[in-house]
Image 1: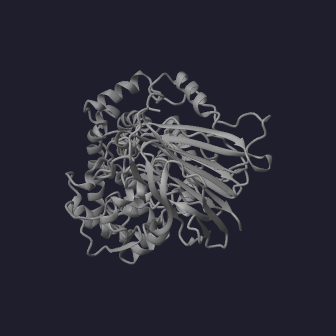
Image 2 (image 1 turned 30 degrees about the horizontal axis):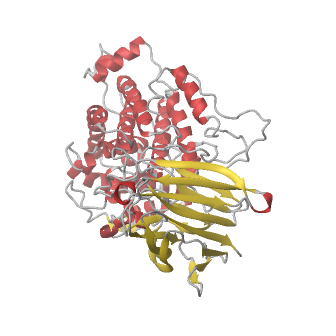
Image 3 (image 1 turned 90 degrees about the horizontal axis):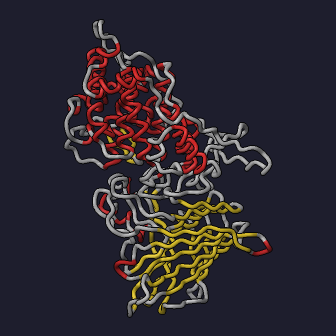
Length: 622
């Protein structure tokens, strides 16, 4: 995507049409609800994909290009926009109405005197806003980005909420008002905070304290100036996008802002291209980052509307590209799968962001770098991670999840991943955050209790999976109906153990049978001797009751709504001995950051270093 946004517009349009036009990323159906899968059109119908023409690049004439260059070199905005007039007084030029909505429960908690963050209540009166205060990363993000303003706006009128916003802003400014170090002045936090201040200006500037209003206006201007300098230096990713978004929003809503806006638009489009892959998925492969990016673009486009300025078409096109990959991670209950450190983000939150975007489209059908394969058959939905973990420069809370799966039947989750590493420090104990990023916290095979990719501190990843081979096809199934078969293999264990993990999943056409094979293949012709321990883990959904069969080669899985699935080991045990099937304790973190005690099925044994094959079957029986 980065290269697409830097090539000539016509070439980019052709490339994008070629790459995504057949995978209905941008299909618009007039009868579809936002975020709802419309029925696929008959073959004879013309394509409903958006016509991507010469609208991707930020267009500007020689004059605007010169203004952008001069502003980048440090010429003040008022000297470029009105060179022979006195600078205007600092004020906001328009009131923004964003379709994004906050969470009412969190807003109600604010009015009662608490931050409600990932299910934890934190008293505002005793909260330490100091830059050196030790808080969970999620708490720092909500507080310093002023994301709580959206929650307050959702739960209270301007008159009722302004006093609460005033009290919190006063405490925050006292300790963080001056630009400096610490989490509050990281470019990502500063950019998100600036957008939040501008979008919710009536709330945060609407109190009775006139001196606070002047201080906040000064903080808005100073934050914009800081981001002018720091945004270009921020590494590629959501942080840089947020920083540039703050620059653009300030350029739209502060006096003499056109030079800043032109400067910011060029940086923002480039940053979006560096953050997003060719299939529309963010390169961090993180569902929360995908959601945040859509929400941020919706807020920013609302700023354009308020300022009565036409946005660069690239912003709308990018938002259209971001929605389908997010839809591909929704289970039958509408909430997201637990990937790359996130909990199962609730259906209401996902639906609200998609509805606010106004994008009507189908889930991504042909993922590339996003990597999450999706199969829908009957009421059964399978998600399968078939890409390497994110690169170090893109990782947020990187996890070693390659070839893990999640499975749901209607609104009920059968197989899950633990999730929640990014929420550690709240209700999830900080001490287990690292473990929730490990391969063992995902529903996949683990060799010698080692991670397929090294899990490092601060959300980073080390050596491990470099390449993933994948083949997806339709194969003959039961009753003459075709089943969907996905075969994928990763090299994360090749260097250490000389083995490649290959996983084959086949889901029947009616969704009542999932057949799996986990195969260990020697990475070289000269396989190693001896044996190595392995475990194939299937973390089970909340409320799933497990009953092992008498022969310990199967188990019944009773779902909370009474549906029944049977798990069974295959008869083949080639390349292994001493295989056992056990039920062990596990945990699952919901979208509010609450951990829940669950169970997991574990196939364990010793595999030959020369390779092995282990098959299993999940079948719906009631």
